[in-house]
Amino acid sequence: MPFLGSRIHLRFHIRMALWSTLLLLACCTRTSGINPQAGSPEFLQLQEFRPPTPLESLFGETATAEVRRPTGNEKHSGPSHPFWVFDLPSAQRPEVLTCTLMMLLAGILCSAGGIGGGGIYVTVLMVFGSLSVWDAVPLSKSIVFFGSLSSLALNLRKATMTVGGSSQSLIDVDTCRLVVPGALVGTYCGVFMNGMLPNWAVLCTLSTVLVGICYMVLKTTHEQYCEEEEALVSQQGDSQDGQDSVECESIRRNTEERSPSALKDKMSHVTRADIALAAVMLLLVVAGSVFRHHAVRCQMANEANAQACHHPALFWLGGATLYSWMRSSLISAVIKVFCWAAPLIFCCTVTASVANSLVGKDGWSRSRTMEYSFMSVFTGCLAGFIGIGGGLIFSPFFLLMGMAPAAAVATSSTCVIFTSSSTTFQYLLTDRIIVSLTLLYGIVNLVASYLGTKFVHYLQDHMSSRRSYISAVVSLGVIVSTLLAFKQLFETAVGSRQAMAH
Image (cartoon, rainbow, N blue to C red; front, side, top):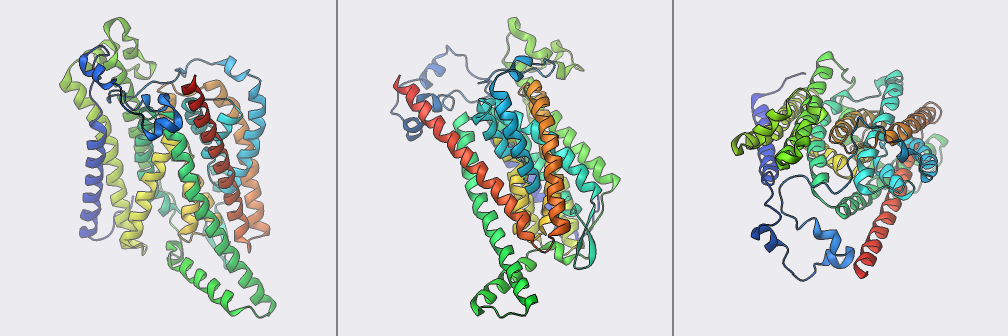
Protein backbone atom coordinates (compact mmCIF):
# COMPACT_ATOMS: atom_id res chain seq x y z
CA MET A 1 0.00 0.00 0.00
CA PRO A 2 1.52 3.35 -0.98
CA PHE A 3 2.43 5.59 1.92
CA LEU A 4 3.38 9.08 0.70
CA GLY A 5 2.67 12.60 1.83
CA SER A 6 3.53 14.86 4.71
CA ARG A 7 3.68 13.66 8.29
CA ILE A 8 1.25 16.38 9.30
CA HIS A 9 -1.45 14.97 7.05
CA LEU A 10 -0.76 11.45 8.28
CA ARG A 11 -1.02 12.46 11.95
CA PHE A 12 -4.27 14.26 11.23
CA HIS A 13 -5.89 11.24 9.57
CA ILE A 14 -4.66 8.83 12.25
CA ARG A 15 -6.09 11.06 14.98
CA MET A 16 -9.42 11.19 13.14
CA ALA A 17 -9.39 7.38 12.77
CA LEU A 18 -8.65 6.82 16.44
CA TRP A 19 -11.27 9.28 17.64
CA SER A 20 -13.88 7.69 15.36
CA THR A 21 -12.96 4.26 16.69
CA LEU A 22 -13.21 5.40 20.31
CA LEU A 23 -16.64 6.90 19.66
CA LEU A 24 -17.84 3.65 18.09
CA LEU A 25 -16.47 1.65 20.99
CA ALA A 26 -18.13 3.93 23.52
CA CYS A 27 -21.48 3.52 21.83
CA CYS A 28 -21.24 -0.22 21.34
CA THR A 29 -19.63 -1.40 24.55
CA ARG A 30 -22.27 0.47 26.49
CA THR A 31 -24.63 -2.33 25.50
CA SER A 32 -22.25 -5.20 26.20
CA GLY A 33 -23.39 -6.06 29.72
CA ILE A 34 -25.34 -9.11 30.84
CA ASN A 35 -29.13 -8.78 30.83
CA PRO A 36 -30.83 -8.76 34.24
CA GLN A 37 -32.83 -11.81 35.18
CA ALA A 38 -36.34 -11.81 33.80
CA GLY A 39 -37.87 -12.13 37.23
CA SER A 40 -35.81 -9.49 38.99
CA PRO A 41 -37.48 -6.32 40.36
CA GLU A 42 -35.31 -4.16 38.06
CA PHE A 43 -36.64 -6.00 35.01
CA LEU A 44 -40.23 -5.83 36.16
CA GLN A 45 -39.96 -2.10 36.67
CA LEU A 46 -39.18 -1.69 32.98
CA GLN A 47 -42.48 -3.33 32.10
CA GLU A 48 -44.68 -0.90 34.05
CA PHE A 49 -47.51 0.76 32.17
CA ARG A 50 -46.86 4.06 30.44
CA PRO A 51 -48.74 6.09 27.77
CA PRO A 52 -48.26 4.91 24.17
CA THR A 53 -45.62 6.64 22.09
CA PRO A 54 -46.24 7.93 18.53
CA LEU A 55 -44.47 4.87 17.12
CA GLU A 56 -46.77 2.60 19.14
CA SER A 57 -49.78 4.47 17.78
CA LEU A 58 -48.63 3.89 14.20
CA PHE A 59 -47.15 0.38 14.36
CA GLY A 60 -48.82 -1.02 17.45
CA GLU A 61 -47.53 -2.14 20.84
CA THR A 62 -45.49 -5.01 19.39
CA ALA A 63 -43.40 -2.66 17.28
CA THR A 64 -41.72 -1.00 20.26
CA ALA A 65 -41.79 -3.88 22.73
CA GLU A 66 -38.34 -4.97 21.58
CA VAL A 67 -36.91 -1.50 22.13
CA ARG A 68 -37.97 -1.47 25.81
CA ARG A 69 -36.28 -4.79 26.53
CA PRO A 70 -33.22 -4.51 28.78
CA THR A 71 -30.30 -3.42 26.65
CA GLY A 72 -27.40 -5.75 26.54
CA ASN A 73 -26.78 -8.38 23.90
CA GLU A 74 -28.08 -9.11 20.44
CA LYS A 75 -31.74 -9.97 20.44
CA HIS A 76 -32.89 -13.19 18.81
CA SER A 77 -36.34 -12.42 17.45
CA GLY A 78 -36.30 -14.84 14.55
CA PRO A 79 -35.63 -18.48 13.73
CA SER A 80 -32.13 -19.87 13.63
CA HIS A 81 -30.82 -21.30 10.34
CA PRO A 82 -27.63 -23.33 10.97
CA PHE A 83 -25.39 -23.14 7.93
CA TRP A 84 -24.67 -26.88 8.01
CA VAL A 85 -28.40 -27.72 7.62
CA PHE A 86 -29.84 -27.71 4.08
CA ASP A 87 -33.45 -26.55 4.65
CA LEU A 88 -35.09 -28.10 1.57
CA PRO A 89 -38.74 -27.42 2.63
CA SER A 90 -38.07 -23.68 2.53
CA ALA A 91 -37.19 -23.97 -1.17
CA GLN A 92 -40.32 -26.04 -1.98
CA ARG A 93 -42.89 -23.43 -0.99
CA PRO A 94 -45.25 -22.35 -3.84
CA GLU A 95 -44.26 -18.67 -3.67
CA VAL A 96 -40.62 -19.52 -4.40
CA LEU A 97 -41.31 -19.86 -8.17
CA THR A 98 -42.83 -16.38 -8.41
CA CYS A 99 -40.03 -14.94 -6.34
CA THR A 100 -37.45 -16.62 -8.58
CA LEU A 101 -38.85 -14.94 -11.71
CA MET A 102 -38.92 -11.54 -10.02
CA MET A 103 -35.38 -12.05 -8.77
CA LEU A 104 -34.24 -12.72 -12.35
CA LEU A 105 -35.76 -9.47 -13.62
CA ALA A 106 -34.50 -7.49 -10.64
CA GLY A 107 -31.01 -8.96 -11.00
CA ILE A 108 -30.69 -7.93 -14.66
CA LEU A 109 -31.82 -4.41 -13.86
CA CYS A 110 -29.59 -4.01 -10.81
CA SER A 111 -26.50 -5.45 -12.46
CA ALA A 112 -26.92 -3.19 -15.48
CA GLY A 113 -27.14 -0.22 -13.14
CA GLY A 114 -24.24 -1.35 -10.98
CA ILE A 115 -26.28 -0.87 -7.80
CA GLY A 116 -25.76 -4.26 -6.15
CA GLY A 117 -29.51 -4.80 -5.83
CA GLY A 118 -29.76 -5.50 -2.11
CA GLY A 119 -32.43 -2.85 -1.57
CA ILE A 120 -34.58 -4.35 -4.31
CA TYR A 121 -33.86 -7.94 -3.27
CA VAL A 122 -34.97 -7.32 0.32
CA THR A 123 -38.34 -6.03 -0.82
CA VAL A 124 -38.75 -8.73 -3.48
CA LEU A 125 -38.05 -11.43 -0.90
CA MET A 126 -40.60 -9.92 1.49
CA VAL A 127 -43.31 -9.10 -1.07
CA PHE A 128 -43.04 -12.08 -3.43
CA GLY A 129 -41.14 -14.59 -1.27
CA SER A 130 -43.23 -14.10 1.91
CA LEU A 131 -40.14 -13.82 4.12
CA SER A 132 -39.84 -11.76 7.28
CA VAL A 133 -37.39 -8.87 7.57
CA TRP A 134 -35.31 -11.05 9.92
CA ASP A 135 -34.74 -13.58 7.12
CA ALA A 136 -34.90 -11.29 4.07
CA VAL A 137 -32.00 -9.00 5.00
CA PRO A 138 -29.34 -11.74 5.47
CA LEU A 139 -30.62 -13.66 2.44
CA SER A 140 -30.37 -10.59 0.22
CA LYS A 141 -26.75 -10.13 1.26
CA SER A 142 -25.85 -13.66 0.21
CA ILE A 143 -27.64 -13.18 -3.12
CA VAL A 144 -25.76 -9.93 -3.78
CA PHE A 145 -22.51 -11.76 -3.07
CA PHE A 146 -23.28 -14.35 -5.76
CA GLY A 147 -24.12 -11.68 -8.32
CA SER A 148 -21.14 -9.48 -7.53
CA LEU A 149 -18.74 -12.30 -8.40
CA SER A 150 -19.94 -12.53 -11.99
CA SER A 151 -20.02 -8.74 -12.41
CA LEU A 152 -16.45 -8.45 -11.13
CA ALA A 153 -15.24 -11.19 -13.50
CA LEU A 154 -16.75 -9.39 -16.49
CA ASN A 155 -15.40 -6.01 -15.42
CA LEU A 156 -11.90 -7.47 -15.04
CA ARG A 157 -12.10 -8.92 -18.56
CA LYS A 158 -13.14 -5.52 -19.89
CA ALA A 159 -10.39 -3.79 -17.96
CA THR A 160 -10.25 -0.52 -19.91
CA MET A 161 -12.52 2.03 -21.51
CA THR A 162 -11.84 4.62 -24.20
CA VAL A 163 -12.34 8.25 -23.24
CA GLY A 164 -11.41 11.03 -25.65
CA GLY A 165 -9.30 8.70 -27.75
CA SER A 166 -7.20 7.49 -24.79
CA SER A 167 -7.48 4.26 -22.82
CA GLN A 168 -8.30 4.41 -19.10
CA SER A 169 -8.83 1.80 -16.42
CA LEU A 170 -12.45 0.81 -15.99
CA ILE A 171 -12.01 0.30 -12.21
CA ASP A 172 -10.72 3.26 -10.19
CA VAL A 173 -8.30 1.40 -7.91
CA ASP A 174 -7.47 4.44 -5.77
CA THR A 175 -11.13 4.94 -4.96
CA CYS A 176 -11.44 1.28 -3.98
CA ARG A 177 -8.40 1.59 -1.70
CA LEU A 178 -10.03 4.50 0.10
CA VAL A 179 -13.58 3.14 0.25
CA VAL A 180 -13.12 -0.55 1.16
CA PRO A 181 -11.65 -0.20 4.70
CA GLY A 182 -14.40 2.14 5.84
CA ALA A 183 -17.08 0.00 4.21
CA LEU A 184 -15.85 -3.06 6.12
CA VAL A 185 -16.03 -1.13 9.40
CA GLY A 186 -19.56 -0.12 8.52
CA THR A 187 -20.66 -3.70 7.81
CA TYR A 188 -19.54 -4.75 11.30
CA CYS A 189 -21.64 -2.00 12.89
CA GLY A 190 -24.59 -2.62 10.56
CA VAL A 191 -24.83 -6.34 11.30
CA PHE A 192 -24.67 -5.57 15.03
CA MET A 193 -27.49 -2.99 14.69
CA ASN A 194 -29.63 -5.44 12.72
CA GLY A 195 -29.51 -7.81 15.68
CA MET A 196 -30.46 -5.06 18.13
CA LEU A 197 -33.22 -3.03 16.46
CA PRO A 198 -36.78 -4.17 15.53
CA ASN A 199 -38.04 -4.92 12.01
CA TRP A 200 -39.96 -1.67 11.54
CA ALA A 201 -36.74 0.27 12.09
CA VAL A 202 -35.14 -1.60 9.19
CA LEU A 203 -38.03 -0.77 6.86
CA CYS A 204 -38.17 2.89 7.91
CA THR A 205 -34.44 3.29 7.35
CA LEU A 206 -34.56 1.53 3.98
CA SER A 207 -37.44 3.72 2.74
CA THR A 208 -35.79 6.93 3.91
CA VAL A 209 -32.45 6.13 2.31
CA LEU A 210 -34.04 5.22 -1.01
CA VAL A 211 -35.93 8.51 -1.22
CA GLY A 212 -32.71 10.49 -0.88
CA ILE A 213 -30.92 8.32 -3.43
CA CYS A 214 -33.79 8.76 -5.90
CA TYR A 215 -33.34 12.52 -5.85
CA MET A 216 -29.56 12.29 -6.14
CA VAL A 217 -29.43 9.87 -9.05
CA LEU A 218 -32.24 11.55 -11.00
CA LYS A 219 -30.47 14.89 -10.66
CA THR A 220 -27.23 13.36 -11.95
CA THR A 221 -29.02 11.75 -14.90
CA HIS A 222 -30.57 15.09 -15.83
CA GLU A 223 -27.17 16.80 -15.73
CA GLN A 224 -25.64 14.22 -18.04
CA TYR A 225 -28.57 14.42 -20.43
CA CYS A 226 -28.19 18.20 -20.56
CA GLU A 227 -24.50 17.88 -21.44
CA GLU A 228 -25.23 15.33 -24.18
CA GLU A 229 -27.91 17.49 -25.76
CA GLU A 230 -25.57 20.47 -25.81
CA ALA A 231 -22.85 18.40 -27.49
CA LEU A 232 -25.32 17.04 -30.05
CA VAL A 233 -26.56 20.49 -31.00
CA SER A 234 -23.00 21.77 -31.23
CA GLN A 235 -22.02 19.01 -33.64
CA GLN A 236 -24.97 19.74 -35.90
CA GLY A 237 -24.03 23.42 -36.07
CA ASP A 238 -27.40 24.60 -34.79
CA SER A 239 -27.87 27.45 -32.38
CA GLN A 240 -29.10 26.76 -28.88
CA ASP A 241 -31.10 28.80 -26.47
CA GLY A 242 -28.76 31.02 -24.41
CA GLN A 243 -30.23 30.13 -21.05
CA ASP A 244 -30.00 26.38 -21.68
CA SER A 245 -26.42 26.76 -22.92
CA VAL A 246 -25.36 28.63 -19.79
CA GLU A 247 -27.06 26.05 -17.59
CA CYS A 248 -25.42 23.09 -19.30
CA GLU A 249 -22.01 24.78 -19.35
CA SER A 250 -22.26 25.39 -15.61
CA ILE A 251 -23.22 21.77 -15.02
CA ARG A 252 -20.32 20.53 -17.15
CA ARG A 253 -17.81 22.77 -15.37
CA ASN A 254 -19.01 21.74 -11.91
CA THR A 255 -18.83 18.07 -12.87
CA GLU A 256 -15.24 18.40 -14.06
CA GLU A 257 -14.18 20.33 -10.95
CA ARG A 258 -15.45 17.73 -8.55
CA SER A 259 -14.01 14.76 -10.44
CA PRO A 260 -10.70 13.52 -8.96
CA SER A 261 -10.37 11.18 -11.93
CA ALA A 262 -10.08 14.21 -14.19
CA LEU A 263 -6.85 15.13 -12.41
CA LYS A 264 -5.17 11.85 -13.31
CA ASP A 265 -3.99 10.77 -16.72
CA LYS A 266 -3.39 7.22 -15.62
CA MET A 267 -5.13 5.29 -12.84
CA SER A 268 -3.27 2.97 -10.48
CA HIS A 269 -3.29 -0.79 -10.83
CA VAL A 270 -4.06 -3.45 -8.26
CA THR A 271 -1.00 -4.86 -6.48
CA ARG A 272 -0.45 -7.98 -4.42
CA ALA A 273 -0.18 -5.81 -1.34
CA ASP A 274 -3.67 -4.44 -2.03
CA ILE A 275 -5.13 -7.93 -2.27
CA ALA A 276 -3.36 -9.17 0.87
CA LEU A 277 -4.36 -6.13 2.91
CA ALA A 278 -7.99 -6.37 1.80
CA ALA A 279 -8.07 -10.06 2.73
CA VAL A 280 -6.65 -9.33 6.21
CA MET A 281 -9.21 -6.59 6.84
CA LEU A 282 -12.05 -8.82 5.69
CA LEU A 283 -10.86 -11.68 7.91
CA LEU A 284 -10.54 -9.43 10.97
CA VAL A 285 -14.01 -7.96 10.57
CA VAL A 286 -15.75 -11.31 10.01
CA ALA A 287 -13.82 -13.10 12.78
CA GLY A 288 -14.39 -10.31 15.28
CA SER A 289 -18.12 -10.11 14.58
CA VAL A 290 -18.72 -13.87 14.62
CA PHE A 291 -16.64 -14.55 17.73
CA ARG A 292 -18.30 -11.74 19.65
CA HIS A 293 -21.76 -12.98 18.67
CA HIS A 294 -21.17 -16.53 19.86
CA ALA A 295 -19.28 -15.38 22.95
CA VAL A 296 -22.30 -13.29 23.98
CA ARG A 297 -24.63 -16.22 23.31
CA CYS A 298 -22.41 -18.42 25.47
CA GLN A 299 -22.43 -15.79 28.20
CA MET A 300 -26.24 -15.73 28.22
CA ALA A 301 -26.50 -19.54 28.37
CA ASN A 302 -26.79 -21.52 31.57
CA GLU A 303 -25.20 -24.85 32.43
CA ALA A 304 -28.27 -26.80 31.26
CA ASN A 305 -28.28 -25.00 27.88
CA ALA A 306 -24.59 -24.60 27.10
CA GLN A 307 -24.76 -25.74 23.46
CA ALA A 308 -24.33 -22.11 22.44
CA CYS A 309 -20.71 -22.46 23.57
CA HIS A 310 -20.14 -25.37 21.15
CA HIS A 311 -21.03 -23.74 17.82
CA PRO A 312 -19.18 -25.24 14.82
CA ALA A 313 -17.81 -21.80 13.92
CA LEU A 314 -15.75 -22.07 17.11
CA PHE A 315 -14.47 -25.59 16.44
CA TRP A 316 -10.92 -24.48 17.19
CA LEU A 317 -11.90 -23.49 20.73
CA GLY A 318 -13.35 -25.91 23.23
CA GLY A 319 -16.84 -25.13 24.45
CA ALA A 320 -15.83 -25.57 28.08
CA THR A 321 -13.03 -23.03 27.59
CA LEU A 322 -15.34 -20.39 26.14
CA TYR A 323 -17.95 -21.07 28.83
CA SER A 324 -15.40 -20.52 31.60
CA TRP A 325 -14.08 -17.36 29.95
CA MET A 326 -17.52 -15.79 29.64
CA ARG A 327 -18.30 -16.51 33.30
CA SER A 328 -15.51 -14.14 34.30
CA SER A 329 -16.63 -10.51 34.14
CA LEU A 330 -13.11 -9.27 33.40
CA ILE A 331 -12.29 -11.79 30.66
CA SER A 332 -15.70 -11.43 29.01
CA ALA A 333 -15.37 -7.64 28.94
CA VAL A 334 -11.88 -7.89 27.42
CA ILE A 335 -13.10 -10.33 24.75
CA LYS A 336 -16.01 -8.13 23.72
CA VAL A 337 -13.98 -4.93 23.64
CA PHE A 338 -11.14 -6.59 21.74
CA CYS A 339 -13.54 -8.04 19.15
CA TRP A 340 -14.74 -4.50 18.52
CA ALA A 341 -11.46 -2.63 18.80
CA ALA A 342 -9.11 -4.81 16.74
CA PRO A 343 -11.00 -4.70 13.41
CA LEU A 344 -12.07 -1.07 13.77
CA ILE A 345 -8.65 0.33 14.69
CA PHE A 346 -6.90 -1.65 11.96
CA CYS A 347 -9.34 -0.62 9.20
CA CYS A 348 -9.40 3.03 10.34
CA THR A 349 -5.61 3.12 10.31
CA VAL A 350 -5.54 1.77 6.76
CA THR A 351 -8.09 4.41 5.73
CA ALA A 352 -5.93 7.17 7.22
CA SER A 353 -2.84 5.87 5.41
CA VAL A 354 -4.58 5.66 2.04
CA ALA A 355 -6.18 9.10 2.44
CA ASN A 356 -2.79 10.61 3.25
CA SER A 357 -1.18 9.01 0.19
CA LEU A 358 -3.93 10.28 -2.11
CA VAL A 359 -3.68 13.84 -0.83
CA GLY A 360 0.05 13.86 -1.47
CA LYS A 361 0.14 11.99 -4.78
CA ASP A 362 -2.98 12.34 -6.90
CA GLY A 363 -4.31 15.81 -6.18
CA TRP A 364 -7.14 14.76 -3.89
CA SER A 365 -8.05 17.34 -1.28
CA ARG A 366 -8.32 16.47 2.39
CA SER A 367 -12.03 17.29 2.41
CA ARG A 368 -12.63 14.99 -0.55
CA THR A 369 -10.93 12.03 1.12
CA MET A 370 -13.03 12.66 4.24
CA GLU A 371 -16.21 12.68 2.14
CA TYR A 372 -15.32 9.34 0.57
CA SER A 373 -14.32 7.85 3.94
CA PHE A 374 -17.49 8.85 5.77
CA MET A 375 -19.61 7.78 2.82
CA SER A 376 -17.98 4.34 2.86
CA VAL A 377 -18.62 3.82 6.60
CA PHE A 378 -22.22 4.99 6.21
CA THR A 379 -22.79 2.73 3.21
CA GLY A 380 -21.24 -0.30 4.89
CA CYS A 381 -23.40 0.28 7.97
CA LEU A 382 -26.55 0.42 5.85
CA ALA A 383 -25.41 -2.65 3.91
CA GLY A 384 -25.30 -4.70 7.08
CA PHE A 385 -28.36 -3.11 8.69
CA ILE A 386 -30.98 -2.94 5.93
CA GLY A 387 -29.54 -5.37 3.39
CA ILE A 388 -28.62 -3.06 0.51
CA GLY A 389 -25.71 -4.25 -1.57
CA GLY A 390 -23.81 -1.01 -1.18
CA GLY A 391 -23.83 -0.22 -4.89
CA LEU A 392 -27.17 1.48 -4.33
CA ILE A 393 -25.16 4.30 -2.74
CA PHE A 394 -21.69 3.76 -4.22
CA SER A 395 -22.73 4.14 -7.85
CA PRO A 396 -24.84 7.33 -7.46
CA PHE A 397 -22.20 8.87 -5.19
CA PHE A 398 -19.43 8.21 -7.71
CA LEU A 399 -21.61 9.71 -10.44
CA LEU A 400 -22.30 12.74 -8.28
CA MET A 401 -18.58 13.23 -7.71
CA GLY A 402 -18.02 13.36 -11.45
CA MET A 403 -16.79 9.85 -12.24
CA ALA A 404 -17.64 8.53 -15.70
CA PRO A 405 -20.75 6.27 -15.59
CA ALA A 406 -18.92 3.19 -16.89
CA ALA A 407 -16.13 3.63 -14.34
CA ALA A 408 -18.68 4.34 -11.58
CA VAL A 409 -20.50 1.08 -12.29
CA ALA A 410 -17.30 -0.99 -12.40
CA THR A 411 -15.80 0.64 -9.30
CA SER A 412 -19.10 0.26 -7.44
CA SER A 413 -19.28 -3.44 -8.33
CA THR A 414 -15.75 -3.94 -7.01
CA CYS A 415 -16.56 -2.27 -3.69
CA VAL A 416 -19.76 -4.32 -3.40
CA ILE A 417 -17.63 -7.49 -3.43
CA PHE A 418 -16.25 -6.52 -0.01
CA THR A 419 -19.46 -5.27 1.59
CA SER A 420 -21.43 -8.30 0.40
CA SER A 421 -18.78 -10.87 1.35
CA SER A 422 -18.29 -9.33 4.79
CA THR A 423 -21.99 -9.24 5.65
CA THR A 424 -22.68 -12.63 4.04
CA PHE A 425 -20.08 -14.47 6.11
CA GLN A 426 -21.10 -12.64 9.27
CA TYR A 427 -24.75 -13.64 8.82
CA LEU A 428 -23.89 -17.15 7.63
CA LEU A 429 -21.67 -18.00 10.59
CA THR A 430 -24.23 -16.58 13.05
CA ASP A 431 -27.05 -18.80 11.67
CA ARG A 432 -29.10 -16.13 9.93
CA ILE A 433 -29.06 -17.36 6.29
CA ILE A 434 -31.34 -20.01 4.73
CA VAL A 435 -28.77 -21.99 2.74
CA SER A 436 -31.23 -23.70 0.37
CA LEU A 437 -32.74 -20.38 -0.76
CA THR A 438 -29.28 -18.84 -1.02
CA LEU A 439 -28.19 -21.44 -3.55
CA LEU A 440 -31.41 -21.16 -5.56
CA TYR A 441 -31.63 -17.38 -5.71
CA GLY A 442 -27.86 -17.06 -5.93
CA ILE A 443 -27.69 -19.11 -9.12
CA VAL A 444 -30.55 -17.09 -10.59
CA ASN A 445 -28.76 -13.88 -9.68
CA LEU A 446 -25.52 -15.13 -11.24
CA VAL A 447 -27.32 -15.50 -14.57
CA ALA A 448 -29.06 -12.16 -14.14
CA SER A 449 -25.83 -10.38 -13.23
CA TYR A 450 -24.09 -11.78 -16.31
CA LEU A 451 -26.90 -10.62 -18.60
CA GLY A 452 -27.08 -7.20 -16.95
CA THR A 453 -23.34 -6.58 -17.13
CA LYS A 454 -23.22 -7.67 -20.79
CA PHE A 455 -26.05 -5.22 -21.45
CA VAL A 456 -24.21 -2.28 -19.92
CA HIS A 457 -21.05 -3.21 -21.86
CA TYR A 458 -23.15 -3.17 -25.04
CA LEU A 459 -24.27 0.35 -24.21
CA GLN A 460 -20.66 1.41 -23.62
CA ASP A 461 -19.49 0.01 -26.98
CA HIS A 462 -22.37 1.26 -29.14
CA MET A 463 -23.70 4.32 -27.32
CA SER A 464 -20.66 5.71 -25.53
CA SER A 465 -21.71 9.29 -26.29
CA ARG A 466 -24.98 8.83 -24.35
CA ARG A 467 -23.74 8.44 -20.79
CA SER A 468 -27.18 9.26 -19.43
CA TYR A 469 -28.52 5.89 -20.68
CA ILE A 470 -26.49 4.02 -18.09
CA SER A 471 -27.42 6.52 -15.39
CA ALA A 472 -31.08 6.14 -16.35
CA VAL A 473 -30.81 2.41 -15.64
CA VAL A 474 -29.52 3.24 -12.17
CA SER A 475 -32.43 5.65 -11.68
CA LEU A 476 -35.01 3.05 -12.70
CA GLY A 477 -33.63 0.49 -10.27
CA VAL A 478 -33.68 2.94 -7.36
CA ILE A 479 -37.25 4.05 -8.10
CA VAL A 480 -38.55 0.47 -8.23
CA SER A 481 -36.77 -0.34 -4.99
CA THR A 482 -38.29 2.71 -3.29
CA LEU A 483 -41.84 1.83 -4.32
CA LEU A 484 -41.49 -1.75 -3.09
CA ALA A 485 -40.01 -0.61 0.23
CA PHE A 486 -42.88 1.79 0.88
CA LYS A 487 -45.38 -0.91 -0.02
CA GLN A 488 -43.86 -3.26 2.55
CA LEU A 489 -43.67 -0.52 5.18
CA PHE A 490 -47.35 0.29 4.68
CA GLU A 491 -48.33 -3.36 4.99
CA THR A 492 -46.25 -3.68 8.17
CA ALA A 493 -47.99 -0.65 9.70
CA VAL A 494 -51.46 -1.94 8.78
CA GLY A 495 -50.70 -5.43 10.09
CA SER A 496 -49.38 -4.09 13.40
CA ARG A 497 -52.45 -1.91 13.94
CA GLN A 498 -54.79 -4.81 13.18
CA ALA A 499 -52.90 -7.04 15.60
CA MET A 500 -53.18 -4.38 18.28
CA ALA A 501 -56.94 -4.04 17.66
CA HIS A 502 -57.44 -7.77 18.24
